Length: 334
Ligand SMILES: [Zn+2]
Image (cartoon, rainbow, N blue to C red):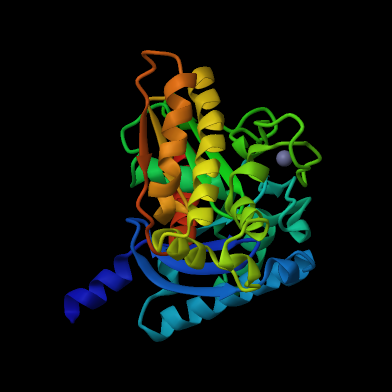
């Protein structure tokens, strides 16, 4: 007991938040990556798309405040909290905490989220702490770099395969943001010039052909019995593929084909040593990997020597990505 109490009083803790298009997660994590407390709220994207900034901010702050209270009740001294990190599904300038382009969650667009989270949590804690905000795929990439499949790798690309597609690019050992903080947006590279219209305004973007929403759409237009369900989840779709639904399996294979085209372009331009695939659709990888490999085998330059890995899905990844967002930016400034 005594050592447990001492551990609690000396731990360095971080407030973590993920403000997403279909969910909000908050957590208190220690700097070693362990989750101390966490809370999650799921909400349909159709609802979250209409939320204003003050609603999204107060929801996240309220949930973090509850966790701080819970931590106190469990004997954790809030003075152990050294800062905060947050991730959002859009382009972020981490230097200023400014959130720019964000089609999936318009309420957060053109806001200084880091500044506002820091100010609100200063009121709760009675002192200032620094908050850092990142794009969600970049947060995932930072996690892979510190704890996952990107550890000790200098040049790698992380593809996050969820409802949309995200990408995170590490060059010469560091996260590459690009000129206006939008590097890695593989979802909006063209794979079919006259393909379907994308919310970004383009046509035939990879995300319209290969993503969670693309899979759901292709099932609606298939002969699969799943097309009649209005409560389709990725889990159901993956289970159907595993149970032998040929239409669903074909949809995943076609998704792999387009992903392979997109990833071959990444490899030919950047010559990374590793591609890391992660996200909610990874449990279906055996259905889309053959399509990826077929395309990459004949599109990638010989001798590029790039290793493709399917990353394991880890619980509470959203708040873990927020943790490393804080840790990475705090490290750079010391
Ligand atoms: Zn697009």
